[in-house]
Image (tube, rainbow, N blue to C red; front, side, top):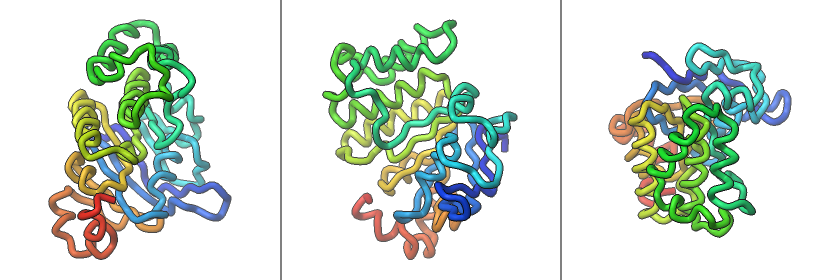
Length: 243
């Protein structure tokens, strides 16, 4: 498979000798959505932060296409085409929607900047209608849409999304995930960490289940739903609650 992102045997954590991600591997093809699921404390968000360059990596490989990212700082990874949307503090609350987008657009090349901005606003018309509004006064769903739109202005080849549905109503989750699917159709690979199991399974092409920082299961959402080990680990208990 031609992978946009390849993570192999990743060992990472905040303190030396105390890995939270303990050998996890995951690949994302262009236009593919891969959901990372697992119980609390499994290392899901730490995996994304390590790939983004925000958590120290002790060993393993991270490749974005042909580029080896393992020694690249976070800003270089972004410049090479790796977008990252954290769960919290993912917009500048004291700035307007327009200024948030302008700051993100300024990071990329000037050529095509206006077209990129228009594409982002077309994908998220809700925030386009609130361009003068402070980002801190947006609803939770609107703020998350702004965060994703900002990431898209960096022209990512792969987008890392950390629990984008957290705190959102089922209706807003459905709307947001419809846009995420549209982004993937445009060729962007998406690595998605989620606690909302039902929503993640509905959008994902493949699912990776982490337990204690290691791969436990991997497959299509339909195949894993039939796997008896999955129910014992996590998803069977969470599917009804959507946790």
